[in-house]
Amino acid sequence: MLSEIPINLERVKKEDLDKEILRVGMIAELDAVSLYEQMAAMTENGNIKKVLLDIAKEEKTHVGEFQALLLEEDEEQEKELEEGKKEVDELKE
Image (cartoon, rainbow, N blue to C red; front, side):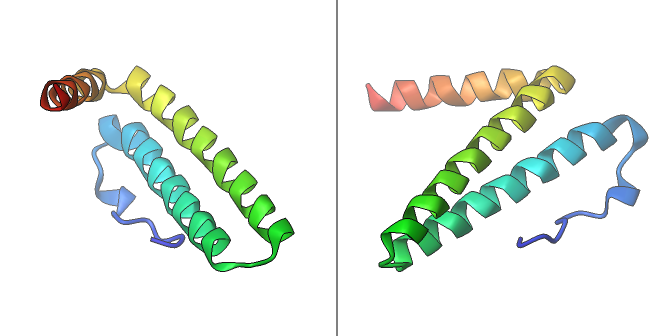
């Protein structure tokens, strides 16, 4: 993604706009996590690696913040997350 919104938010229905904004925020943060972790894996400089991994961890917190808000806004999303977790637990048995 790298700072590019994957959908045209102008085409989103007004009642869905906040949910889509939160999803775009999550995508951006996950993209940042991936970028920082990949760069950390590439560098041999311990200080740079440490800072990149710390920043990646902060971005994961941001994902959680967006997700918490999304779950407040979208009851179906909350239900389906629980269903997904249940399916994984069943497959792991």
